[in-house]
Image (cartoon, rainbow, N blue to C red; front, side, top):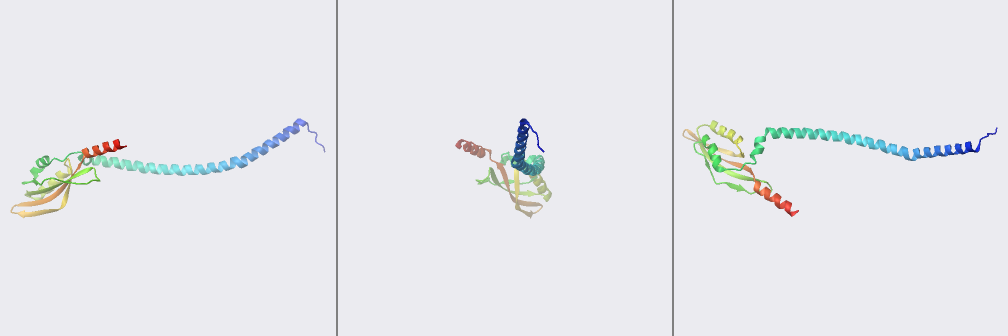
Length: 188
C-alpha cells in the first residue's frame, strides 16, 4: 500500500501537524496555568467583594446610627459652640432659687483638649427638692454643656433647704483651636 500524496498535500499535512502541536503546547504551557490563575483570582475577587459588601453594610449601619445620634442630640452638640457667660447663667437660673451665688470661675488647664472647663460652685436655698429637680432639667436644656458634680449637700434650715454643689461647664475654645490650626498649617 503506497500512498500517493502530492507534495503540496504533504506540505499542508506537515504544516497542520506542526500548528496542532504549537496550539497544544500553547494551551498546555500558557492557557491552562493562566486559567488556574484566573480561577484563583476570581475566587479571591469574590471573597473581597463579599468583604466589601459586609464593610459597606457596617459603614451604612454606623453612619445611620451616627446621623440618628446627631439628630437626637443636636442641642448638646450645638451647646459646645456657646461661650459661658456667668451673668447670663445667674439671670437664667435665679428664678429657681431664693439665693444663687457663683464663685469666681476657675479655668481648668487641659493641654490635650480643645475645650475649656470652668468650675462653678453654687449654693442655694430652696423650698422643696422639686425645685432642685426642675433646675436639673433646666441645666439639661440649657445652651451650655454642664455637668453637676457629686456629692450634692442638702441641709435643712427651718422651712427651707440649703443646697451646695459644684458644676463643670465645658466650652469649646474656638480661639485657641483656630490659632493652633493656623500655626500648624503655616509650619508645613
